[in-house]
Image (cartoon, rainbow, N blue to C red; front, side, top):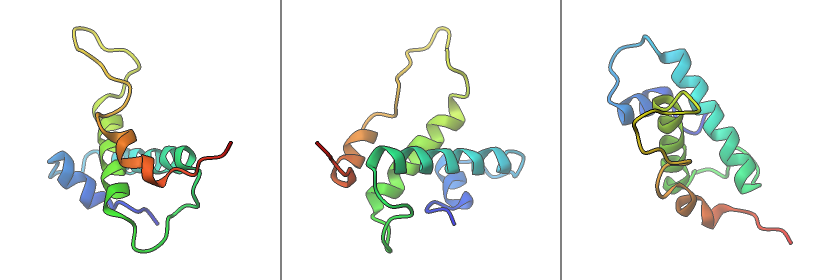
Length: 96
């Protein structure tokens, strides 16, 4: 089960139709997988899931949905949504 539900991300994206539901669900799964790998934490995280992690999933999934290509022309691109790593920092399992 996803931490962020499809309806939640569609609200975040201001999408009201269901044309891209499968695509959006895939972006949620990809974002959750990336964040799980980045934090090194057990997934899904403890219940209740912290709001900061939910927001990080929404931001990354929205970024993946809105930027589907590896290159953009005529646009200033960024690698990750601004603030994403700051949201994840407290939940990252550091190992040395």
